[in-house]
View 1 (cartoon, helix red, strand yellow):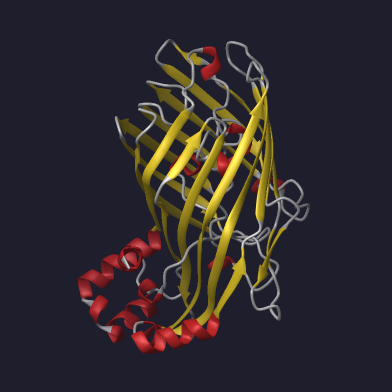
View 2 (cartoon, rainbow, N blue to C red; view 1 turned 90 degrees about the vertical axis):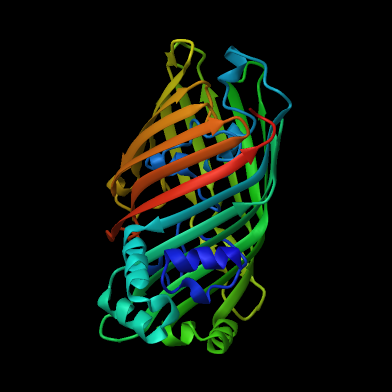
Length: 392
């Protein structure tokens, strides 16, 4: 219920969301630019702040999705210090994301008292016809990063919605959730120059999608009926594999290849009469350099290209790049991190700060949620707080 309340504050119409968790973008049916969701299974400020480019430097938690070969570290540590067997115990990890339209609508709701008045809420939504709203909440109750293995339960809620032009009070929306466990592991040579990794997500996806009357969505009984009639449930079946090759030179050149949703993941519907939910494979190749910053940190610069097997997609939509300054450490959990990045949609920026047990991250980024070669740009912001009782 607490996650529902958070989403309600961030996104006007999310009062009708029921808990369970997860979101992906690429489907073979019914998806459109207005209701595309983020492809990752949980929110990460590090990737978003670098334009989505993370395949060569993703470590531990981020590596589960962005490149499993980085689970257990990406090799910097072998050059400087011995890594403890227990790399991290997250207890917990929580993230909230919102786009600029949802933030504006939330402000109008508060100003007009529409949060407690369905008709006033519908009027606010009609005034924002055609403007896509988006919100997300991710939660990891406890995650374990031991050696080169990670076991992380994930709960992720995502919603995208837009008031329908020419249909007062009508909202087209897509809401997906997942509750499951991500498990991953990697192997590396003695010098940590070459590593291979694998991760998989095991859980249940629930999705509600369609066009609904806003006033029905804020009525408890009608909402329950609509959700029951429109909800689809799938068994999650997605896997990621990755490779890293790192040259132990002063600037540490690194190459990466990672396939997310290998072979187009097919999530089978529990109702066998329904079609499976298909996630397109994202084959990504990247390269980076990571020179030392004296004895106090490291500077990462990365360029990569994704969706390489999607031949219909324009090349400019596949490219992304980023840079990161890490101080007080050499990994994504250093004392301080500053990030910049960009892709076809625009620029991004992020920051993280670790204070003993407690860590904070924040970022703003542009994302193109247009399907295939359609272009639909929006700006999002997200924040993360976590407690890591092992690596501090």
